[in-house]
Image 1 (tube, rainbow, N blue to C red):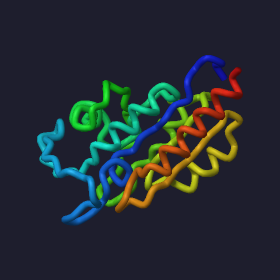
Image 2 (tube, rainbow, N blue to C red):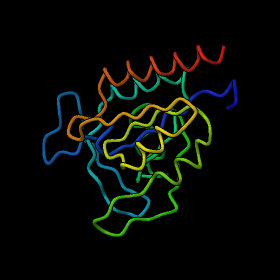
Image 3 (cartoon, helix red, strand yellow):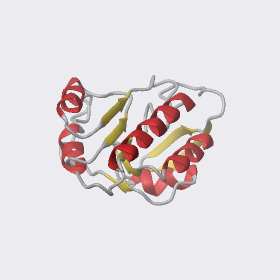
Image 4 (cartoon, rainbow, N blue to C red):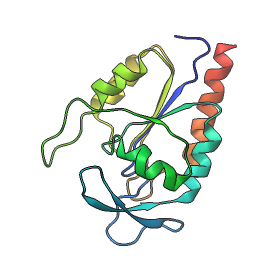
Length: 169
């Protein structure tokens, strides 16, 4: 593990930053209309507080998009949340309609042996096994998909980042 590398914070979108809801999002969310690189129009609920919270975590983490939105996340959602440009993982295993996106192989390749926190509402069983086997500090957070990221998650992430930083000194 590189001693001066920040831990990585992997961010999903749907179910984390954008609640999975039918018509009405939780209090504080604003509906945005965005056009994906495919030309498809999406309506996405975002909470401006999420941008503030994530920017608070930047000192302790390298933020990386880990979402099926791929390059559309930094292009469309990052600016809406007030986030500066972030890397996005491009997934090599594309899902078939009605199946889940298998993120773990590309996530594992991206993070290597760097400490990582991964927030995703739909982590596979294999992700938990991978996290338990890693020697580097690893935190998995699975918010409820209708609520997404909340302040308690941010406190948990900040504590993890602080603990990792303390181990490096």
